[in-house]
Image (cartoon, rainbow, N blue to C red; front, side, top):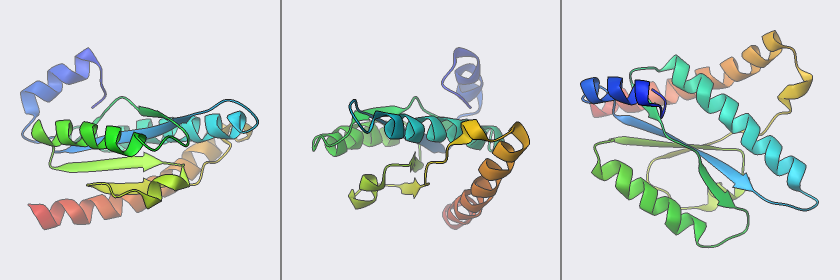
Length: 150
């Protein structure tokens, strides 16, 4: 389910079945690395939407956690998000990012780091194949996690 009024109405009716939050981590920067930063965010946004479509009804796709690259306080700000989400009933937190620096963070939940790919040079079929193969990998991990906690 997406962070939209229509989907939140569905969530409120079936929240006992929705136990997983997907939080995309989207970087911001200017300067010489700006295009690379945008590519990371764009890839993760597309991936997050595809993951939500695959698991509709089991997870809630939150708005992106947008952060400034290189800022030390961003990890504690994300922890506040995590605390808020878990206090409101989400049993599983999944972060997805293309920013390698998050791998160093000590986060509660699962962090999936995916290398950003330039999707603008691929046709629609190739985009679906690339995203689909990565989703299948994450699906296997999430399914095992869900089975171990039920």
